[in-house]
Image (cartoon, rainbow, N blue to C red):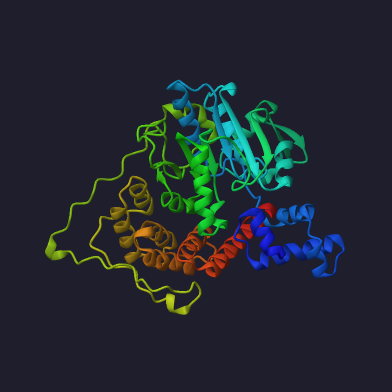
Length: 438
């Protein structure tokens, strides 16, 4: 078995040939082995682990997508208030360098959840990431939000622009190396909250389904799962139901009771500053979406024309003159209005606003992106066309690239999926390399 096959088997990741080649060349140089066949023949468990470290993507930061932590904290408050369970167990997989599970611990502490009432497991393939997480030491690149007051509450300066997490929070998080697909992480139904974000985008279709099935087994029947933005469609195709909390990307099991602790959480819409975590349970509810538009008179309402279904390459000049979709007259609305409608379970009205925006602003990449997401499973050709239009206008649109990769995998185009995933990974690395230098 060659290095590519062994790495795919060890990680479950749909790794590209190019990514593995870069890792192999780096390890051959590091070990002083110039003979490829000899290196492959001597590829033992220790060397395979070293290769894994080079192909995983450990980049993260504290309070990334803060609304997800607000959902988790408020869910925890409500779950404890209902009684019956004195200790909430939570899982972060993959946990990278500990940024996500520590953010969760801080969110719970700031929401007033007693330390003895929760325990968090952080799991990652990378032993280097686990070691970094256990150290709990972070530089400025880990602090990227608008509100960094949590750093004053939960970190101690350690010199050289480094900060160390509060030891009391460290004690609430247990880190270990493991693989979601193959490791024995916990008995079924052990976790009330699971964070699994931006992992499935690296899997092919069958592996994605297997990973989601494993997560469903680990999650309590009334638990909540927090996913990555581009991964929500994969979960909803595999036994989960999305919860209507904007920017949180939260889900419950499809067969779970709709009135569980996740129902109607009183969360504000938009970015939630960590400084207000303590008040999140009493925060005002999200404002209701605007009223449904009255239908126009039949004589004046042309039938909406679907987004063209032809698949257009991202860089093909033929994409440029594509006309924006024509739709029935829609009330003037903003992209935020469309997002609010979509999050509120009103996709048809959200699509109408997107089409109206694109009729006036055909270069609006974000409107094309949202239109592609809304087309989703019901019209995959339309979804792909809109998303490709998005990356034509914004070639480095990470979320559009990830979602296109999911669509390619679903139709069996493994090569296209790998190419899009590699492109997204390059955007990711370039973006965060630029941030680190700034």
